[in-house]
Image 1 (cartoon, rainbow, N blue to C red):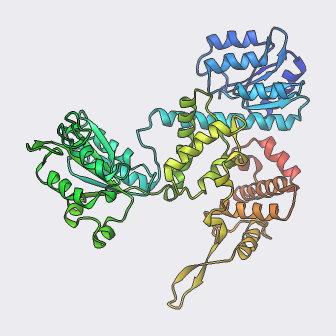
Image 2 (image 1 turned 120 degrees about the horizontal axis):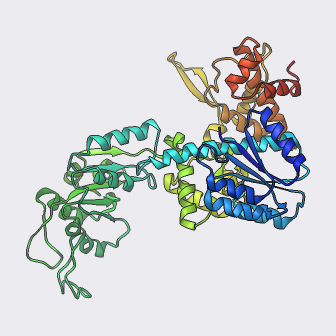
Image 3 (image 1 turned 90 degrees about the vertical axis):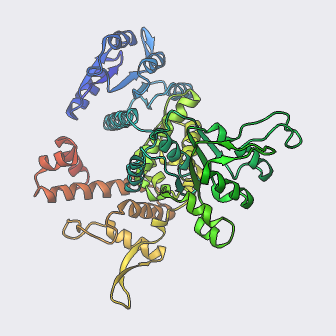
Length: 510
């Protein structure tokens, strides 16, 4: 692991931090002023460079804020913690505006300082992994099984020119799928032309699609090529095809049948070699039944269908997408990319996202502008996320016997769910967690419900109460698993043996 760089002209501060961090298994390297740091950075490699920089703000021979600015130019992703005995507003604001990970006023509590540094290390390591993934990430992101199915379908269609229909809710990324289909097809060197048929007035849509001759209508002073001609040799993406006017559907069917069409006001047939990919958020089968969409056109377009899942169906992708969009937003705005805490990510992943991936992208843009610190906490999330309690938290599903004898899920009122979750979070008499419970796999939901109950009761130490219960249960479970062997339990939990010993004492688990 790369070392923690400590910069302070006070030898006692350096000594105390070095010893505390070494006890936690974190290597360190110390400097007395910013000049030494910049000289070391000039010759540092990726292996011996800093994992975290912890710097005083006022030192002889340089300012910690100037050092922060210089370091961020060279290593923009490096978390920097600014320490100072001068706890004033200007210093705090300057530190955060300069991209500091956190602001640590002196004198500080040593365990809390070490915990802050460890949190910065963990965040740094997560960001390194995320950046590595994004460096090799394709034009679409997704680890959920539903998205993997989409990727496999794109791969199977990579050498085909077949017509494809993409279905999915608004904002789910249908155009990205269409672009991927084009990029990995034999037509990749040809143009990709996209048109949203719902966004163009009916009177203009025909001209947009097929072009017009000079004088075809008032204002048509020159001949204009339509999207079909522009896409010749490539791909034409017809978004929201379900909103296409019925009379234009007939013309589209004719083009799909033989590749010929007429410009508006024209008399000579135009030949176009175009692959058509259509998309819609509507139920086209129902539109056909209602007489709003031609059945023959539906079958012509629906040769291969790809269903794109809603974001709420692929919640495991929220983490990756959030970090990706935060990086994108920062690049667009020309600012330092913000990091997001695990608690904020967890809460964000439980949001229903009615606007799907597009809404998540907008939220990330909002957070880049509005979040007050470099690390986004749960409380910094936008009002629409904080104001909603996910469906999973409103009710708990417990098994009940139906009249047919099959186990089914039934909804439990929220008050009963609160009691149920409270009981499930309580310490069992024998100190052993059950391996399966009614909330198995949904402990985050249970935690949120319990937190809501405690907050609603007016309790002011919710953080300490739940943290102690969580840590107690985690350590107890690990000790049961290792038959009381502390060192082995610490290794399995990923913490130091001194940490588990201290926690056992603090939590009264002796």
